[in-house]
Length: 118
Length: 420
Image 1 (spheres, chains in turn purple, red):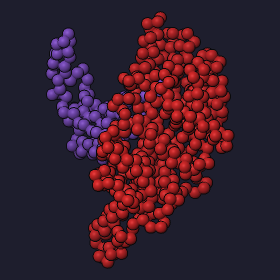
Image 2 (cartoon, each protein chain N blue to C red):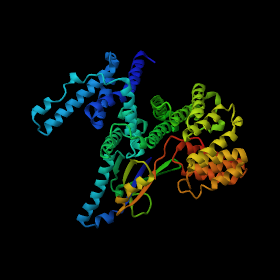
Image 3 (spheres, rainbow over the protein chains, first blue to last red):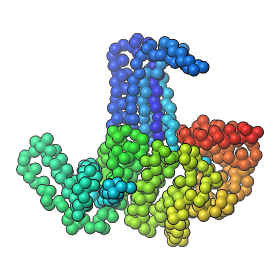
Image 4 (cartoon, rainbow over the protein chains, first blue to last red):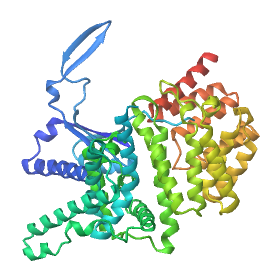
C-alpha cells in the first residue's frame, strides 16, 4: 500500500529551537529515511523550499490570479513529502511517529488504478 | 510478432523456467542462498542480452550455472582478497571447469529445489510485500526491473526490498531445505497465500497503463502449476490453481476499454475464457472427489458455479450459499461473511443479507471498510431503500483508494439520485 507522509512544520518552532536540539531532531529524520531506504519501503522523498516564497494561483472565469504566499492562514506549512510503499497503515503510522515530534504529520493513502468488481 | 520478438519471448520463457533450477544448483554448491541469488540474477540478465543475438546454447542450464558459478567464484576471490587471506586459500576454490553440471543435477533435485526455494522465499519472518518480491525474482525468474514496474515502484526500492528480505531470511536462520514435517502444512499455507496475493495484484489491475501488472496473473498461474506438479496430491494446491483459472477466465469481461469495472452480473459472458473455465471446473471437480476439503477448494467451487451459469439469473445461489456455510465453518473471516451475506440475500432476500452484514459492524477488521459499505449499498438497493443505498454508495466511494472502484460507486449513487 502506498502512502504519502506529509510533514507540516511551523518555521518558528525550528528557528527558536536550541542548535543541539535541532541537530538531534533532524538526526531523527535522517535515521528514519536511512532505515526506509534500506528496507525497500521508500519511493521518494522531497523537502519543500520556504513557504514564504510560495505563490498561490486560482483561475476563475479563465483568468489566473497569482498571489504571494501559501494558501490559507495556517501557521504550519507543508515542509516535506515522503512517498512510501508499506505493508499496512499501521506500518505507515509507525514510520510517521518519530518525525511528528515538533511537526504535524498527515498520513494519506495514494489512490490506485486497480480495483475489484463489487 | 516479428521473428526477433519471438526469439526474445522464447528466451524469456526458457530463462523463467530455468531460474529456480539454476538458483537451486548454485545454492547447493556454494552454500549461500543470498549470494547465489544475486549470481543467478546476473546470469539471467547476461543470457537475456546475449542469447537473442548469439543463439540459445546447446545446454542453456549448464551455461547459466557456469556463468553464475564464475560470478560467485570471482566474488569469493575478491572477498578473500579483501580480508587479506593468503593466496593459498584462493587456490583452494574450485576452478570454473569443475562446476559445470554434474551428475547430482538430475530433474528430481530440480523439483526439490523449486519447492525449497518457494518455502524459503515465503518465509514467515518476511512481510508480505517482501515475500512477493523475492518469490517473483528467485522462483519466477523475473528481473528486479520487471517486478518494480509491476508494482509501480522505483527499481532501487525493489532492489533494496529484495536484498533486505534475503538478509532477514539469513538472520532468521532459515535453511535451503524442506521445512520439518510438523511445520510443513503451516508453511505451505503461507506459500499459497503469497501466490494468491501475486494473482490478485495482477487481477485487480485495470486495462491501459496497468497492463504490466496483469502479467502477474499469468505468473501466479504458472507458479501454481509448478507447485501442483511438485505436490500433486495436495487438495489446496489444486484448489488454488482452480480458483485462479476460474477467476482469470472472467478477466477480459471485468473491465471496459476505459478501465471501468463491470460487476459479475452485468459481464458479457461470451467474453469469458471457456478453456480456462473447462480446465478449472475439471480440476476442482476431481479434487473435491478425492482430497480433504479446504478453503481454496470451496472458493474454487463457488467460482465454478458462477462461471457455469449461462446468465446471471441462472446462477445457482442455493448451492453457493451451502458452500459459503461450509467456508464459514472451515475458515471464517470478515470477507467470507461479507460474501456469504450476498448469497443469503440472493436466496432469502435482501433483508436477511443486511441482517448478516450488521454482525460485521462490530468487527474491527472490517468496520467502516469501503467493501462492507458497498455490499450494504447493493443490498439496500435490492430492498428498494433508494436513499439508504445512495448514502452507502457515497460513503464507500469516499473510503476506497481505488480510482475505478470510486468511479463505479459514484456512478451507482448518481443513478439512484436521477431515479428518485
